[in-house]
Length: 493
Image 1: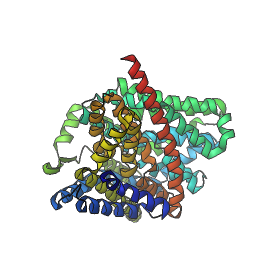
Image 2: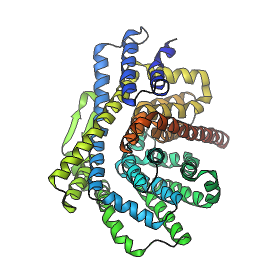
Image 3: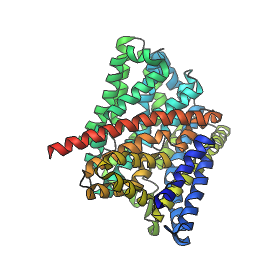
Image 4: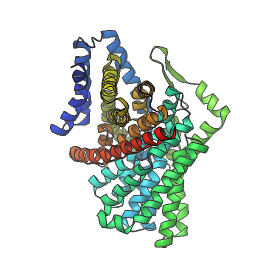
């Protein structure tokens, strides 16, 4: 009975989104209110006012971390758009190939992981959707493809979620990163097939099956290799560059249309991203620089174990990149005002929605609802927890729209449950990380971001349903791979 009460806030979200077709902002705030009512009013939880306030404040602080990055990520896009750089990138891709499928592969599978790995938090959606629309893709299709492009979320924002998961469990970050990649190998292939299917249908999938394998294999190989042997934080960046090279060379070999004199224009258009990448490399790979950045301008709240190193966060480097675009391309005051108004209008509703979901998750966690749901599932399923684990991770990713948020909520609990059930902690951690990351593309907050950027807010429910089906397919693959990995581990001990 108590577990039935505990799951009500989650049911509220699904009912509001899929039955009553409410916006994600409304669903988030109502579900947060539902969580409060159950946490405070139910004798099973009896949450007091002080704990409720603490949970809400923690939800707000977690939102601040994301909002900081998101603000300057959205602003950077609008600045680049006003400077004509987005059109330059679109023109390069259009001139490289007139094949719509290959344009989508280059953007969705190859280029998007670079943007997401550098900035994280769904910023790739803000970049990819407008380029697709500029290339002539229908707006709803562009909104869906931009969300599908979030294929490398576990390595997004310089693998923040994966690093947090490793710190919470004591598992090596290289092991968690590479293990998550292995558990995602068929998911990468699946998303590549879905991209081609959306653009050209099954006949196009059949025609380009070898290219699909080459592109998805490049993404997997790059992420796995760099996670295992180089740097988990930069694995997504290197893997994206490798995949971009493979797809570009494939186009050159098949179509022979790319002109060498386009290179300078492309480098000019990509200069903000190149600068951002360079700054992030410097801040992460040079110890004196990273040490200085981490030790200055820190926002801390010891009571909530909250720390935001303002100068070390990707948000700060996005801000510097925004200043670079303003100066390099000489944007005037009127243009800056225009871009900031657009940024504000997009930033506010996304953050309100994000706060509602994260605060709800914090109330559920502090009241014991989250633990009760996980333990009930573990008691019922026993060793079949290996099937439940991806579902828990996916639930966190869906609700918070964040791999980091889901790992913060569930990673430690999942690994502890695995140890009690004598399951492999590494397998369960990989499962949590993979499912949490790959399902964020269907998160209501990210869908809201995509439809807003694509200017199809009235189609939010349609896009959400499509992404739910696509993400459901990815989750099914992760569950199957987890089961196979479980039996492999079982018989090799």
